[in-house]
Length: 435
Image (tube, rainbow, N blue to C red):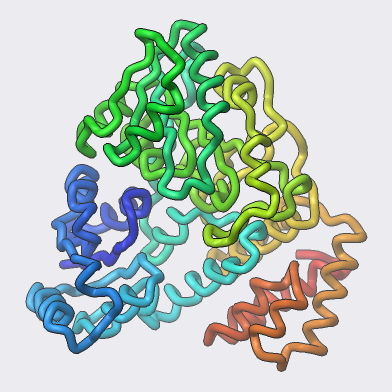
């Protein structure tokens, strides 16, 4: 079977697409040509690079676009899988002539129901426990990625990925510097990673730190060389970056710092350890990339260098550390230091229990037992939905917090069976006999 995978996003998304690409034997990957080296180094398949600057804004009559469609059609694919939710990717999958289609914009029922459910959390991300790797791979039921090795009791080589493409997600310079001092004090070698455009920014963070144990590899590595460096490292400390996802395929243990718009349930690499803000203290977390922060990114300070050190060394369990667990859907996270608590987490696990029942036929009670006031809040929103459900989406969604995913499915998808199943499931949680 000749298979085309559409993944027009960035480096991290390409690495998260590995399970789908490796599910098939003959694979071509339609990607942003800037990341051809990632497709090659990760052995995703035959690269089909696209110059996005010539596609956007999309003009279906442009010569470049028509030539792209002709090139794809001439390769005579049997199946196309679109892993990119962008408008351009959805348009491409609709315009090409391939017998079988799956993924975003494919209209293949099972695939669309799964993606509609996954995308229903877009307006209330804190209610999601779906990892992006699992969202991708369940479009075709691909095998999961390898889990990372556990952290060595005495790691000696530590890789730092300091910079992020989104500065809003970037941990503070003081925190990175303090963490480096701690590792160097213990005799650890630190390797600084990053691309050339990040050099000045990263070097300024460590400019006052003079040590032969600090090795600068910023802008000096190809993707293949990056994977080799990661394979030699005992640990990667990073934010939510493409390098984090590359570590999965170098089997490098990861401690990842998630702040602001980066949410560990969604994008932590398989088997990593996450440190993130307390969602009770920061009810705005995770926020949107595009929104300015009224609290001057105070959540960055909720993860300290001591938290990272304790997570690595095991000398203490940070209160903000989250660890991965696994079920038929894939990876989800639970707090390491305390029992799960809070209405948002209860609802997040409830939505996950529904998915296990609806898509896999597994009956499992939500992982967090409800408190009476949580059930009262859920009942109140269900009653309100009965009264308001005929309102347009843009008005309806403003009235709900716990039921935003249900409202999304009702108003913005064509999945009546999914909607009715989810609604009945949530109603059953408020009754004495629960699923």
